[in-house]
Length: 147
Image (cartoon, rainbow, N blue to C red; front, side, top):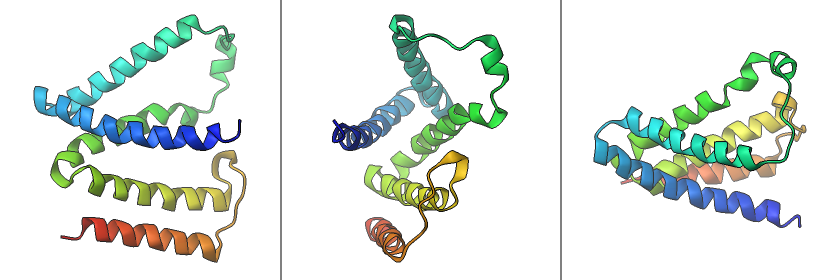
């Protein structure tokens, strides 16, 4: 069952690459990047709404929501930023170029988050091996983007 936790992120990566192409085509069709991002989130919200409707899991109380720290509600803003940046970038630099830069940024941020245990993450100190991995990814990003 643990292998599922390795397979699902891989499939999510495939889905993100496909999503960038689909959203890019939507942007070209309607000639409006912000509206394309909005439509993308609207369809995703509708799908999640259906899943919630059929979910048997109990909902939090109103009091539970008021106890949530404000920054914990900003994930959607970050998602909107990511989708909009992808919509703006993918047509200019291509899917592979864009995603190698996205992955390099993700890995660098993840390395720091793990090292410092940011937002309750398990602390995993930066090591020479991890630094070599980041250097290889950033070098790969350079090579993929090099003309």
